[in-house]
Length: 265
Image (cartoon, rainbow, N blue to C red; front, side, top):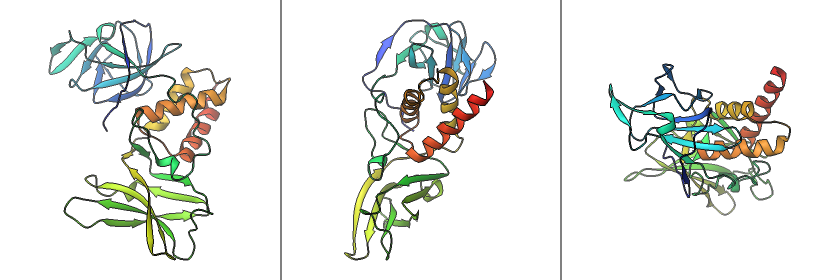
């Protein structure tokens, strides 16, 4: 996945504690020996080992927002790792507020699949993904159907019919069978014998429950008194860090994590 950062502000402010939400590449806390993952805790005095210059760590700092950490200009090379003390590493503040007013609620096809380049151009897909559609616009009876079209240079497009249940379209990670292909979502009308392009897709497959891990970190690190505001905050971080998630799937994961967190407290 290409990690996109637009209109970000570089900062040299130091913080006392960071909580990891996302790791790109392989980064080790050499002070503790831990390989970083969502939920890992860091302090300014920790020594980080990056496997390569493009490795990055997204962290949340209570009351200050989300930051991206990568090797700084004065990092050193030790044992094939790029080593930098956290307080000296490059910290770039994630663009806040861009999605703060957005809600994952009520987005339907095709809007739910259209991404914003200023945030992340990828669509996030788990094993099973549910999308609500307007049955008056997309009547799936009588041979009408949604489909994925996979396109590979020099080959004929491959059409993958998609399953629907009532007003819900189901897209599975397995439907994206070729990583070299580009994908489009379309709707075929049996009456007109024509297909309508609904969205270009850039699938980012979540095979390790990364979305749920990010949701857990943000819920644990935030005040859940205003659940709607927290939901928008968590949605924005998932969108920017991984890709735009399906609204239905995101809401299910968020509600599950919130309920589990309430039981633990």
